[in-house]
Image (cartoon, rainbow, N blue to C red; front, side):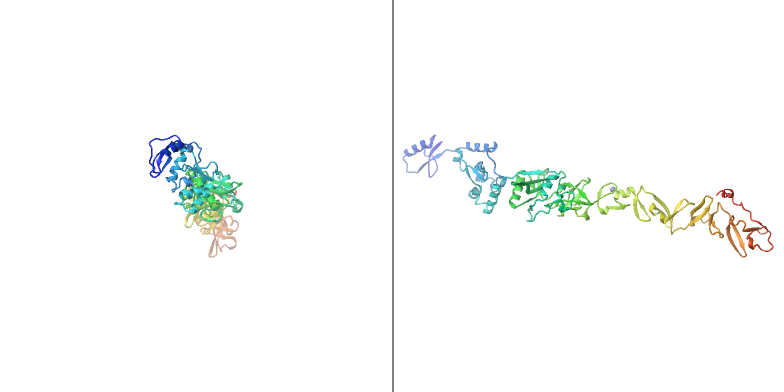
Length: 491
Ligand SMILES: [Zn+2]
């Protein structure tokens, strides 16, 4: 519908409306007025509903978030009235409704994005900002792939040269596992279930990764984006944000795989403000933690070994090295030491309690020794006990059961030494006899003395046959004074 209006005020010159502008023009030409008149389209909001529906039904492809969610765009004149969208005819251009009249005519204007931004936002965006947004808008559409398995991480990292946002240096994790000398690529440690890898490959070469970012799907977060250049890094970050991801400062709480090899732990370079790792109760994973005990920021694929934890040789728990103890040839945690190890007071080392220990008499009291220390002690057959060498003396004693090792000190009343043979004899099996020679006397074992001594009936003394005093009335020395002498003969 059309009507005739005053050009200067825009107010209607006639109250009636016409179906076509031809009809309206014919009437205007008949009007006798000096004030300039013109024909105006009567607009309503019906076209706005039509345009809005086109977004809903997918006819229009919305503008990317870099524009649609920008502060300078939201609630702007363009935002409210242009129904701007990515041009269907050329996705590098923008299509929009320039005026309500064009809206009524269903006419959309298609122009390059940089011209659109300069025309409508030139007062708010600097030319370099317009250039950057335009570059992102016109960049070829990239396909984002997100993988959570080790193979995806390996693909996105190994031999892929990308740079970090925070520096212009190439990523330290860009090498192959051969370079790191690790059993798998360090980035494969990410594949513990929490973290995934989002990446974009080159449009011309699907084997070449041009941007990547570790993401945490459950938390919809990412920390840092890597890419071959700034444009693709921004593009990937934008794609992630468009997908609902938001940037986080660190990976705190995320678990990664604990890959041990040759006593060391394989770790990727952990991005963000928190880079230390804490061993979980589960040996298979480590958790990114502010108070972790493993440094997750080495660039060579290995956790620093001096800060690593050690696996207890008995229960397998991972514990700080300070809380461990050598037990035999193993390293055990404190709990296992107190519940399953015995301290050897000789070597001052712990041994597993299933091993053989002895109780040893020392001058400092009874001690528990590991069996391996038994060469530093002797076993007394008489007492049925061990005695420490050095603290006690051992002596070979003839007994009715043959020669035995006895402790000298603890058995001094139980044996005598024959001065004829120089050997020791058990008192309960052998008989000692005092043999007199002139003024001196010696103790002899009686059977050793058989035939060599005689007995003076007068004073009861024994003398060597060769030196019987004058006038003595001698007789053969009587054997058999020892209670068990009969048995002794059997030995
Ligand atoms: Zn343990």
